[in-house]
Length: 463
Image (cartoon, rainbow, N blue to C red; front, side, top):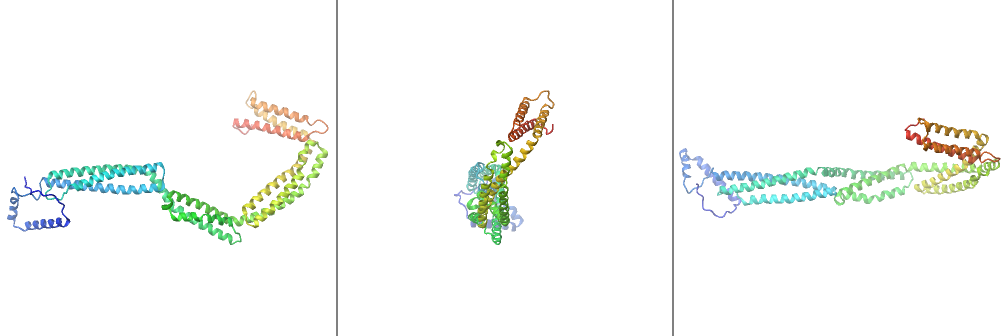
Protein backbone atom coordinates (compact mmCIF):
# COMPACT_ATOMS: atom_id res chain seq x y z
CA UNK A 1 0.00 0.00 0.00
CA UNK A 2 1.09 3.56 -0.68
CA UNK A 3 1.53 5.76 2.29
CA UNK A 4 -0.74 8.64 2.69
CA UNK A 5 0.10 11.89 4.37
CA UNK A 6 -1.52 12.84 7.62
CA UNK A 7 -5.06 13.91 6.97
CA UNK A 8 -6.00 17.48 7.57
CA UNK A 9 -9.42 19.09 7.28
CA UNK A 10 -10.18 19.33 3.61
CA UNK A 11 -10.50 22.95 2.60
CA UNK A 12 -11.26 24.22 -0.90
CA UNK A 13 -8.24 25.70 -2.60
CA UNK A 14 -8.55 29.06 -4.23
CA UNK A 15 -7.87 29.17 -7.97
CA UNK A 16 -4.43 30.81 -7.56
CA UNK A 17 -3.32 28.01 -5.15
CA UNK A 18 -4.29 25.35 -7.71
CA UNK A 19 -2.42 27.28 -10.38
CA UNK A 20 0.77 27.48 -8.23
CA UNK A 21 0.54 23.80 -7.37
CA UNK A 22 0.06 22.88 -11.05
CA UNK A 23 3.07 25.04 -12.04
CA UNK A 24 5.26 23.32 -9.45
CA UNK A 25 4.26 19.88 -10.72
CA UNK A 26 5.04 20.90 -14.27
CA UNK A 27 8.48 22.16 -13.17
CA UNK A 28 9.18 18.84 -11.44
CA UNK A 29 8.27 16.88 -14.54
CA UNK A 30 10.53 19.03 -16.72
CA UNK A 31 13.37 18.56 -14.23
CA UNK A 32 12.96 14.78 -14.33
CA UNK A 33 12.99 14.80 -18.10
CA UNK A 34 16.32 16.68 -18.04
CA UNK A 35 18.11 14.14 -15.76
CA UNK A 36 20.37 11.47 -17.24
CA UNK A 37 18.76 8.16 -18.10
CA UNK A 38 20.35 6.38 -15.18
CA UNK A 39 18.95 8.85 -12.75
CA UNK A 40 15.56 8.47 -14.36
CA UNK A 41 15.81 4.70 -13.90
CA UNK A 42 16.38 5.26 -10.23
CA UNK A 43 13.26 7.33 -9.79
CA UNK A 44 10.81 4.38 -9.37
CA UNK A 45 12.89 3.13 -6.47
CA UNK A 46 12.54 6.43 -4.76
CA UNK A 47 8.78 6.00 -4.67
CA UNK A 48 8.88 2.45 -3.38
CA UNK A 49 9.41 3.55 0.18
CA UNK A 50 6.54 3.16 2.63
CA UNK A 51 6.39 6.86 3.46
CA UNK A 52 5.58 8.14 0.01
CA UNK A 53 2.34 8.15 -2.23
CA UNK A 54 2.11 7.35 -5.86
CA UNK A 55 1.89 10.26 -8.27
CA UNK A 56 0.71 8.30 -11.27
CA UNK A 57 -1.66 5.34 -11.81
CA UNK A 58 -3.16 3.29 -9.06
CA UNK A 59 -6.71 2.42 -8.09
CA UNK A 60 -7.48 5.86 -6.64
CA UNK A 61 -6.59 7.58 -9.88
CA UNK A 62 -8.81 5.20 -11.86
CA UNK A 63 -11.68 5.88 -9.50
CA UNK A 64 -10.98 9.63 -9.76
CA UNK A 65 -11.16 9.40 -13.58
CA UNK A 66 -14.41 7.43 -13.47
CA UNK A 67 -15.89 9.88 -10.99
CA UNK A 68 -14.82 12.78 -13.17
CA UNK A 69 -16.43 11.11 -16.19
CA UNK A 70 -19.64 10.65 -14.19
CA UNK A 71 -19.45 14.29 -13.17
CA UNK A 72 -19.05 15.39 -16.79
CA UNK A 73 -21.96 13.19 -17.90
CA UNK A 74 -24.15 14.58 -15.14
CA UNK A 75 -23.20 18.13 -16.12
CA UNK A 76 -24.16 17.42 -19.74
CA UNK A 77 -27.50 15.95 -18.63
CA UNK A 78 -28.09 18.96 -16.39
CA UNK A 79 -27.36 21.34 -19.26
CA UNK A 80 -29.66 19.44 -21.65
CA UNK A 81 -32.49 19.44 -19.10
CA UNK A 82 -32.05 23.13 -18.39
CA UNK A 83 -32.08 23.95 -22.12
CA UNK A 84 -35.17 21.82 -22.72
CA UNK A 85 -36.97 23.46 -19.81
CA UNK A 86 -36.16 26.94 -21.12
CA UNK A 87 -37.39 26.06 -24.61
CA UNK A 88 -40.57 24.50 -23.27
CA UNK A 89 -41.24 27.51 -21.04
CA UNK A 90 -41.32 29.64 -24.20
CA UNK A 91 -43.88 27.25 -25.69
CA UNK A 92 -46.03 27.41 -22.55
CA UNK A 93 -45.88 31.21 -22.55
CA UNK A 94 -46.92 31.20 -26.21
CA UNK A 95 -49.93 29.02 -25.41
CA UNK A 96 -51.03 31.01 -22.35
CA UNK A 97 -50.77 34.27 -24.29
CA UNK A 98 -53.45 33.03 -26.68
CA UNK A 99 -55.40 30.18 -25.12
CA UNK A 100 -57.36 30.14 -21.86
CA UNK A 101 -59.12 26.84 -22.50
CA UNK A 102 -59.22 24.01 -19.92
CA UNK A 103 -56.65 22.11 -22.00
CA UNK A 104 -54.26 25.08 -21.88
CA UNK A 105 -54.70 25.52 -18.13
CA UNK A 106 -54.06 21.81 -17.64
CA UNK A 107 -50.85 22.08 -19.69
CA UNK A 108 -49.65 24.93 -17.47
CA UNK A 109 -50.34 22.89 -14.33
CA UNK A 110 -48.51 19.86 -15.75
CA UNK A 111 -45.53 22.04 -16.67
CA UNK A 112 -45.39 23.44 -13.15
CA UNK A 113 -45.42 19.89 -11.75
CA UNK A 114 -42.56 18.96 -14.06
CA UNK A 115 -40.76 22.10 -12.92
CA UNK A 116 -40.86 20.86 -9.33
CA UNK A 117 -39.38 17.53 -10.40
CA UNK A 118 -36.69 19.37 -12.34
CA UNK A 119 -35.86 21.42 -9.24
CA UNK A 120 -35.56 18.25 -7.15
CA UNK A 121 -33.33 16.51 -9.71
CA UNK A 122 -31.19 19.62 -10.12
CA UNK A 123 -30.81 19.99 -6.35
CA UNK A 124 -29.68 16.37 -6.10
CA UNK A 125 -27.13 16.93 -8.85
CA UNK A 126 -25.76 20.11 -7.27
CA UNK A 127 -25.50 18.42 -3.86
CA UNK A 128 -23.55 15.54 -5.41
CA UNK A 129 -21.15 17.95 -7.11
CA UNK A 130 -20.63 20.05 -3.98
CA UNK A 131 -20.14 16.99 -1.77
CA UNK A 132 -17.01 15.74 -3.55
CA UNK A 133 -13.84 17.59 -4.53
CA UNK A 134 -12.46 15.39 -7.25
CA UNK A 135 -9.36 17.62 -7.59
CA UNK A 136 -8.02 16.79 -4.13
CA UNK A 137 -4.54 15.26 -4.12
CA UNK A 138 -5.47 12.91 -1.32
CA UNK A 139 -8.72 11.67 -2.87
CA UNK A 140 -9.28 8.13 -1.72
CA UNK A 141 -10.56 5.40 -3.99
CA UNK A 142 -13.61 4.77 -1.81
CA UNK A 143 -14.51 8.44 -1.81
CA UNK A 144 -14.09 8.65 -5.59
CA UNK A 145 -16.23 5.53 -6.02
CA UNK A 146 -18.95 6.97 -3.83
CA UNK A 147 -18.80 10.24 -5.77
CA UNK A 148 -19.11 8.34 -9.03
CA UNK A 149 -22.17 6.49 -7.76
CA UNK A 150 -23.91 9.63 -6.52
CA UNK A 151 -23.13 11.56 -9.69
CA UNK A 152 -24.30 8.68 -11.88
CA UNK A 153 -27.57 8.44 -9.93
CA UNK A 154 -28.04 12.20 -10.24
CA UNK A 155 -27.41 12.00 -13.99
CA UNK A 156 -29.90 9.16 -14.43
CA UNK A 157 -32.57 11.14 -12.59
CA UNK A 158 -31.85 14.17 -14.78
CA UNK A 159 -32.18 11.98 -17.88
CA UNK A 160 -35.50 10.50 -16.67
CA UNK A 161 -36.96 13.93 -16.00
CA UNK A 162 -35.70 15.11 -19.39
CA UNK A 163 -37.48 12.18 -21.07
CA UNK A 164 -40.73 13.05 -19.27
CA UNK A 165 -40.26 16.68 -20.27
CA UNK A 166 -39.77 15.67 -23.91
CA UNK A 167 -42.93 13.56 -23.86
CA UNK A 168 -44.85 16.45 -22.35
CA UNK A 169 -43.49 18.76 -25.05
CA UNK A 170 -44.57 16.35 -27.78
CA UNK A 171 -48.10 16.39 -26.37
CA UNK A 172 -48.25 20.18 -26.61
CA UNK A 173 -48.23 20.01 -30.41
CA UNK A 174 -51.92 20.80 -31.08
CA UNK A 175 -52.10 23.58 -28.47
CA UNK A 176 -48.83 25.11 -29.59
CA UNK A 177 -49.78 24.88 -33.25
CA UNK A 178 -53.06 26.66 -32.60
CA UNK A 179 -51.32 29.35 -30.55
CA UNK A 180 -48.60 29.91 -33.13
CA UNK A 181 -51.23 30.16 -35.86
CA UNK A 182 -53.07 32.86 -33.94
CA UNK A 183 -49.86 34.72 -33.19
CA UNK A 184 -48.91 34.52 -36.86
CA UNK A 185 -52.30 36.04 -37.71
CA UNK A 186 -51.96 38.87 -35.22
CA UNK A 187 -49.56 41.26 -36.95
CA UNK A 188 -51.20 40.93 -40.40
CA UNK A 189 -54.65 41.37 -38.84
CA UNK A 190 -53.63 44.56 -37.06
CA UNK A 191 -52.02 45.89 -40.23
CA UNK A 192 -55.16 45.08 -42.25
CA UNK A 193 -57.23 47.00 -39.71
CA UNK A 194 -54.95 50.03 -40.00
CA UNK A 195 -55.02 49.92 -43.79
CA UNK A 196 -58.82 49.54 -43.80
CA UNK A 197 -59.17 52.60 -41.58
CA UNK A 198 -56.88 54.58 -43.86
CA UNK A 199 -58.84 53.49 -46.94
CA UNK A 200 -62.13 54.46 -45.28
CA UNK A 201 -60.74 57.88 -44.37
CA UNK A 202 -59.51 58.46 -47.91
CA UNK A 203 -62.88 57.40 -49.34
CA UNK A 204 -64.67 59.87 -47.08
CA UNK A 205 -62.35 62.65 -48.18
CA UNK A 206 -63.08 61.84 -51.82
CA UNK A 207 -66.84 61.87 -51.21
CA UNK A 208 -66.69 65.20 -49.44
CA UNK A 209 -64.89 66.53 -52.47
CA UNK A 210 -68.08 65.93 -54.49
CA UNK A 211 -70.15 68.09 -52.14
CA UNK A 212 -71.65 65.26 -50.09
CA UNK A 213 -71.24 65.50 -46.32
CA UNK A 214 -71.45 61.80 -45.33
CA UNK A 215 -71.86 62.83 -41.69
CA UNK A 216 -73.20 59.44 -40.60
CA UNK A 217 -70.24 57.63 -42.14
CA UNK A 218 -67.83 60.11 -40.57
CA UNK A 219 -69.42 59.46 -37.16
CA UNK A 220 -69.05 55.71 -37.62
CA UNK A 221 -65.40 56.14 -38.57
CA UNK A 222 -64.75 58.38 -35.57
CA UNK A 223 -66.25 55.73 -33.30
CA UNK A 224 -63.45 53.38 -34.37
CA UNK A 225 -60.73 55.71 -33.07
CA UNK A 226 -60.65 54.20 -29.53
CA UNK A 227 -60.38 50.76 -31.09
CA UNK A 228 -57.35 51.90 -33.10
CA UNK A 229 -55.77 53.18 -29.88
CA UNK A 230 -56.20 49.76 -28.27
CA UNK A 231 -54.70 48.08 -31.33
CA UNK A 232 -51.68 50.36 -31.09
CA UNK A 233 -51.28 49.50 -27.40
CA UNK A 234 -50.76 45.93 -28.51
CA UNK A 235 -51.52 42.40 -27.44
CA UNK A 236 -49.21 42.69 -24.44
CA UNK A 237 -51.72 44.97 -22.74
CA UNK A 238 -55.00 43.59 -24.08
CA UNK A 239 -54.22 39.94 -24.85
CA UNK A 240 -53.68 38.17 -28.15
CA UNK A 241 -57.18 36.82 -28.74
CA UNK A 242 -59.02 40.07 -27.84
CA UNK A 243 -56.58 42.03 -30.00
CA UNK A 244 -57.07 39.65 -32.91
CA UNK A 245 -60.87 39.88 -32.62
CA UNK A 246 -60.67 43.67 -32.30
CA UNK A 247 -58.50 43.94 -35.42
CA UNK A 248 -60.88 41.80 -37.46
CA UNK A 249 -63.91 43.79 -36.22
CA UNK A 250 -62.26 47.12 -37.00
CA UNK A 251 -61.25 45.91 -40.46
CA UNK A 252 -64.81 44.76 -41.24
CA UNK A 253 -66.42 47.99 -40.06
CA UNK A 254 -63.85 50.19 -41.80
CA UNK A 255 -64.29 48.23 -45.02
CA UNK A 256 -68.06 48.66 -44.80
CA UNK A 257 -67.61 52.41 -44.33
CA UNK A 258 -65.27 52.57 -47.32
CA UNK A 259 -67.70 50.68 -49.55
CA UNK A 260 -70.64 52.86 -48.50
CA UNK A 261 -68.60 56.02 -48.98
CA UNK A 262 -67.52 55.01 -52.47
CA UNK A 263 -71.11 54.13 -53.36
CA UNK A 264 -72.58 57.31 -51.89
CA UNK A 265 -72.56 59.37 -55.12
CA UNK A 266 -74.28 56.48 -56.90
CA UNK A 267 -76.81 56.18 -54.07
CA UNK A 268 -77.57 59.90 -54.27
CA UNK A 269 -78.17 59.63 -58.01
CA UNK A 270 -80.35 56.55 -57.48
CA UNK A 271 -82.49 58.34 -54.88
CA UNK A 272 -82.88 61.30 -57.21
CA UNK A 273 -84.03 58.97 -59.97
CA UNK A 274 -86.51 57.19 -57.67
CA UNK A 275 -87.96 60.50 -56.53
CA UNK A 276 -88.71 61.48 -60.11
CA UNK A 277 -90.00 58.02 -61.07
CA UNK A 278 -92.33 57.63 -58.08
CA UNK A 279 -93.65 61.16 -58.48
CA UNK A 280 -94.52 60.38 -62.11
CA UNK A 281 -96.15 57.10 -61.09
CA UNK A 282 -98.27 58.82 -58.44
CA UNK A 283 -99.54 61.26 -61.04
CA UNK A 284 -100.37 58.41 -63.42
CA UNK A 285 -102.27 56.55 -60.70
CA UNK A 286 -104.26 59.66 -59.94
CA UNK A 287 -105.40 59.63 -63.55
CA UNK A 288 -106.16 55.90 -63.53
CA UNK A 289 -108.05 56.12 -60.24
CA UNK A 290 -110.36 58.62 -61.90
CA UNK A 291 -111.35 55.89 -64.38
CA UNK A 292 -112.59 53.50 -61.68
CA UNK A 293 -115.95 55.25 -61.23
CA UNK A 294 -117.10 54.59 -64.83
CA UNK A 295 -116.08 50.93 -64.45
CA UNK A 296 -118.05 50.64 -61.23
CA UNK A 297 -121.06 52.25 -62.87
CA UNK A 298 -121.04 49.61 -65.61
CA UNK A 299 -120.62 46.81 -63.06
CA UNK A 300 -123.59 48.10 -61.07
CA UNK A 301 -125.70 48.38 -64.20
CA UNK A 302 -125.02 44.95 -65.67
CA UNK A 303 -124.21 42.60 -62.78
CA UNK A 304 -125.56 41.57 -59.40
CA UNK A 305 -124.40 43.50 -56.35
CA UNK A 306 -122.28 40.56 -55.15
CA UNK A 307 -120.10 41.04 -58.25
CA UNK A 308 -118.93 44.56 -57.37
CA UNK A 309 -119.68 45.42 -53.75
CA UNK A 310 -116.07 44.74 -52.60
CA UNK A 311 -114.86 47.35 -55.13
CA UNK A 312 -116.99 50.20 -53.82
CA UNK A 313 -114.18 51.77 -51.77
CA UNK A 314 -111.52 51.61 -54.50
CA UNK A 315 -111.85 55.23 -55.75
CA UNK A 316 -111.71 56.78 -52.28
CA UNK A 317 -108.93 54.45 -51.10
CA UNK A 318 -106.91 55.10 -54.24
CA UNK A 319 -107.17 58.85 -53.76
CA UNK A 320 -106.10 58.54 -50.10
CA UNK A 321 -103.15 56.31 -50.96
CA UNK A 322 -101.97 58.72 -53.64
CA UNK A 323 -102.29 61.63 -51.21
CA UNK A 324 -100.17 59.78 -48.62
CA UNK A 325 -97.65 58.81 -51.26
CA UNK A 326 -97.22 62.41 -52.39
CA UNK A 327 -96.77 63.51 -48.76
CA UNK A 328 -94.07 60.87 -48.21
CA UNK A 329 -92.41 61.95 -51.45
CA UNK A 330 -92.07 65.48 -50.10
CA UNK A 331 -90.55 64.13 -46.89
CA UNK A 332 -88.16 61.97 -48.91
CA UNK A 333 -87.12 64.99 -50.95
CA UNK A 334 -86.36 66.89 -47.74
CA UNK A 335 -84.34 63.97 -46.39
CA UNK A 336 -82.40 63.80 -49.66
CA UNK A 337 -81.63 67.50 -49.47
CA UNK A 338 -80.36 67.05 -45.91
CA UNK A 339 -78.37 64.00 -47.07
CA UNK A 340 -80.19 61.76 -44.63
CA UNK A 341 -79.86 58.82 -46.98
CA UNK A 342 -81.35 56.15 -44.74
CA UNK A 343 -84.47 58.26 -44.07
CA UNK A 344 -84.87 59.05 -47.75
CA UNK A 345 -84.56 55.38 -48.71
CA UNK A 346 -87.08 54.30 -46.06
CA UNK A 347 -89.62 56.94 -47.14
CA UNK A 348 -89.28 55.97 -50.79
CA UNK A 349 -89.96 52.33 -49.86
CA UNK A 350 -93.16 53.46 -48.12
CA UNK A 351 -94.21 55.43 -51.20
CA UNK A 352 -93.61 52.45 -53.42
CA UNK A 353 -95.72 50.18 -51.19
CA UNK A 354 -98.60 52.68 -51.21
CA UNK A 355 -98.51 53.01 -54.98
CA UNK A 356 -98.33 49.23 -55.46
CA UNK A 357 -101.44 48.77 -53.32
CA UNK A 358 -103.24 51.50 -55.25
CA UNK A 359 -102.20 50.04 -58.59
CA UNK A 360 -103.56 46.62 -57.63
CA UNK A 361 -106.89 48.06 -56.46
CA UNK A 362 -107.34 50.22 -59.55
CA UNK A 363 -106.41 47.32 -61.82
CA UNK A 364 -108.79 44.98 -59.96
CA UNK A 365 -111.84 46.98 -61.05
CA UNK A 366 -110.94 46.78 -64.73
CA UNK A 367 -109.93 43.11 -64.46
CA UNK A 368 -113.20 42.29 -62.72
CA UNK A 369 -115.25 43.83 -65.52
CA UNK A 370 -113.21 41.98 -68.17
CA UNK A 371 -113.64 38.58 -66.50
CA UNK A 372 -117.33 39.09 -65.83
CA UNK A 373 -117.91 40.08 -69.45
CA UNK A 374 -116.14 36.90 -70.61
CA UNK A 375 -118.06 34.51 -68.36
CA UNK A 376 -121.38 36.21 -69.08
CA UNK A 377 -120.76 35.77 -72.78
CA UNK A 378 -119.54 32.15 -72.57
CA UNK A 379 -119.76 30.45 -69.15
CA UNK A 380 -119.21 27.07 -70.79
CA UNK A 381 -115.57 27.89 -71.47
CA UNK A 382 -114.87 28.29 -67.74
CA UNK A 383 -116.81 25.12 -67.02
CA UNK A 384 -114.84 23.05 -69.55
CA UNK A 385 -111.56 24.45 -68.33
CA UNK A 386 -112.35 23.29 -64.81
CA UNK A 387 -113.70 19.88 -65.90
CA UNK A 388 -110.56 19.27 -67.93
CA UNK A 389 -108.43 19.89 -64.82
CA UNK A 390 -110.56 17.40 -62.84
CA UNK A 391 -110.41 14.69 -65.55
CA UNK A 392 -106.67 15.14 -65.90
CA UNK A 393 -106.24 14.61 -62.15
CA UNK A 394 -108.53 11.56 -62.21
CA UNK A 395 -106.45 9.92 -64.98
CA UNK A 396 -103.29 10.53 -62.99
CA UNK A 397 -104.86 9.08 -59.83
CA UNK A 398 -105.90 5.88 -61.70
CA UNK A 399 -102.59 5.41 -63.53
CA UNK A 400 -101.30 1.92 -62.68
CA UNK A 401 -104.15 1.23 -60.25
CA UNK A 402 -107.40 -0.74 -60.34
CA UNK A 403 -109.01 1.55 -57.79
CA UNK A 404 -108.02 5.08 -56.81
CA UNK A 405 -106.34 5.92 -53.53
CA UNK A 406 -109.04 7.21 -51.14
CA UNK A 407 -106.79 10.17 -50.37
CA UNK A 408 -107.12 11.17 -54.05
CA UNK A 409 -110.66 10.01 -54.76
CA UNK A 410 -112.38 11.97 -52.01
CA UNK A 411 -111.02 15.47 -52.84
CA UNK A 412 -111.57 14.86 -56.56
CA UNK A 413 -115.17 13.74 -55.98
CA UNK A 414 -115.69 16.81 -53.79
CA UNK A 415 -114.32 18.99 -56.60
CA UNK A 416 -116.81 17.51 -59.08
CA UNK A 417 -119.70 18.21 -56.71
CA UNK A 418 -118.46 21.73 -56.02
CA UNK A 419 -118.25 22.50 -59.73
CA UNK A 420 -121.81 21.29 -60.24
CA UNK A 421 -123.04 23.54 -57.47
CA UNK A 422 -121.20 26.50 -59.01
CA UNK A 423 -122.84 25.78 -62.38
CA UNK A 424 -126.21 25.80 -60.63
CA UNK A 425 -125.66 29.40 -59.49
CA UNK A 426 -125.74 30.55 -63.13
CA UNK A 427 -129.46 29.85 -63.31
CA UNK A 428 -131.86 32.72 -62.72
CA UNK A 429 -132.28 36.25 -64.03
CA UNK A 430 -129.21 37.84 -62.33
CA UNK A 431 -126.57 35.12 -61.83
CA UNK A 432 -123.71 35.77 -59.43
CA UNK A 433 -120.97 35.41 -62.01
CA UNK A 434 -118.26 36.49 -59.60
CA UNK A 435 -119.18 33.74 -57.15
CA UNK A 436 -119.10 31.28 -60.05
CA UNK A 437 -115.60 32.43 -61.07
CA UNK A 438 -114.23 32.25 -57.54
CA UNK A 439 -115.69 28.76 -57.10
CA UNK A 440 -114.19 27.39 -60.33
CA UNK A 441 -110.84 28.90 -59.38
CA UNK A 442 -111.04 27.23 -55.95
CA UNK A 443 -111.88 23.88 -57.59
CA UNK A 444 -108.83 24.08 -59.87
CA UNK A 445 -106.59 24.91 -56.91
CA UNK A 446 -107.89 21.91 -54.94
CA UNK A 447 -107.31 19.63 -57.94
CA UNK A 448 -103.79 21.03 -58.38
CA UNK A 449 -102.97 20.11 -54.78
CA UNK A 450 -104.03 16.50 -55.41
CA UNK A 451 -101.91 16.31 -58.56
CA UNK A 452 -98.90 17.77 -56.74
CA UNK A 453 -99.17 15.23 -53.93
CA UNK A 454 -99.48 12.28 -56.34
CA UNK A 455 -96.47 13.37 -58.35
CA UNK A 456 -94.43 13.97 -55.25
CA UNK A 457 -95.15 10.48 -53.95
CA UNK A 458 -94.44 8.85 -57.31
CA UNK A 459 -91.33 10.92 -57.86
CA UNK A 460 -92.32 12.03 -61.34
CA UNK A 461 -93.38 15.23 -63.04
CA UNK A 462 -95.24 13.45 -65.82
CA UNK A 463 -98.44 11.47 -65.96
